[in-house]
Length: 128
Image 1 (cartoon, rainbow, N blue to C red):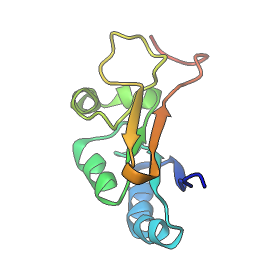
Image 2: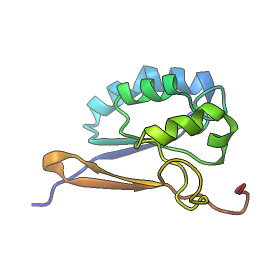
Image 3: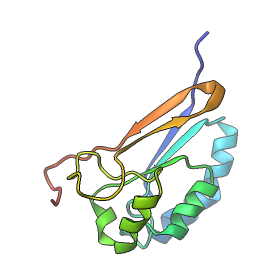
Image 4: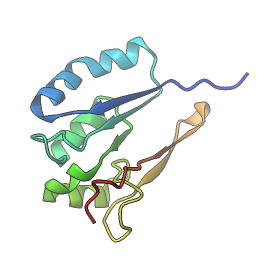
C-alpha cells in the first residue's frame, strides 16, 4: 500500500491578526488532522508586507515546513536577506534568477517519502 501524506496549505497570513490566528490554531489543527506537511503563504505575515525573521521563526516553530511568498516579499528589505539564507522560504521560481532565494524545495519526510514544493506566480502584475 502506498504511503499517504496529509498536506495542509494555508493561504495568505496577513499581519498581526493573521499571525495571532495561526499561532492560536495551527498546532492543534496539525495534531487533530494528523498533518504530515504544512505550507503557508507568508508574504504578508509581517505588518501586511513581507516577512521578517521573527515571524518566520514563529511559523516554523508552529509546525510549518515551507513558507511561500509572492511579490509583496520585496516590500520589506529584511525579507531579501532572510530568503538568501533560509531554504524553506520560497520566492516565485519564475521571478528573475538574479533575485535571492529559491523557488522550489524538496523536503524529506523520512518513511513517508519526499514532498516537492514549487512557488510560481502569475506574471501579469509581477515587477521585474
